[in-house]
Image (cartoon, rainbow, N blue to C red; front, side, top):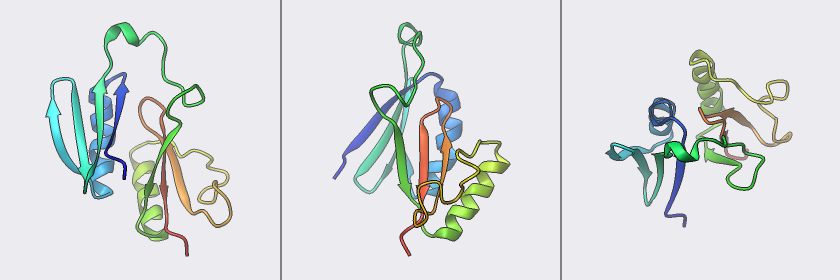
Length: 129
């Protein structure tokens, strides 16, 4: 079991605005908050977002470099994926692979793909039917 994931971000406030509505929709609860970070937990696993120091912001994150590529979360159903997709669109969050949505991961992989403020790819995946 994964204990936690800690991600350094370029703008903590933007990350809080993004993850602060999404994670509770997925069953996470606010866990800790301090000047330079915030975390949300679900059962025994938590996600931490920390403001990167100014001196480390010169090279922006890119998911194709060495390191984290994406985070994938379980959705409750295909209907849940559709509802979350609508919310993402209403919030102005770009859906990735829009031409293949909701089957961008393959014909039996019903999901929505999008990005957080630092362009970390996020997936929300429906259970297999």
